Image (cartoon, rainbow, N blue to C red; front, top):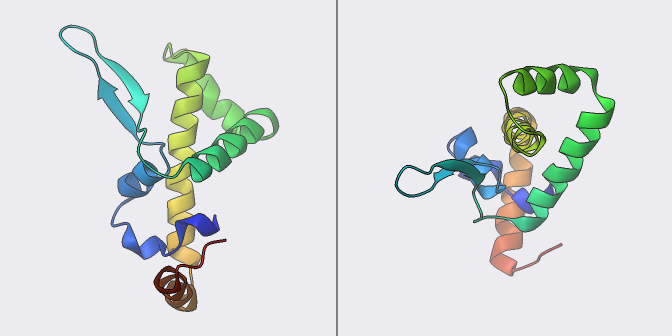
Amino acid sequence: MAAVGCVARFATEDQFASYCMAAPMVRGSGKNSRVQLNRDGNCRLNWALHIVALTRRCCDQQTRKFLAKVKARGKTPRASLRILKTHTARELFRHLNSTSPPALFHLAAIQRHARIYF
């Protein structure tokens, strides 16, 4: 999660989900339309969200209930995982936004200025 840096640079949950490569995008042409995840963003953060989503799907009872509702709407297992990743990214944004101390913002700015990456 350190790859996010300063979460204050994202104005909305949607911008954060887009950065995490977890924002849904409608793709297609003509009569075809399908929903895919945004392919622009941070691949490492997307991988971390993927692992979190897989773990939540196996171990968390609330997530199982959520996925049962999604399946009842007729979504495929792949689509349900995509929806879960988007939901997880938005939850993470809300959590980081509510708990990030201002000192971390300054540290992230210093690291970017000095080009220090972990």
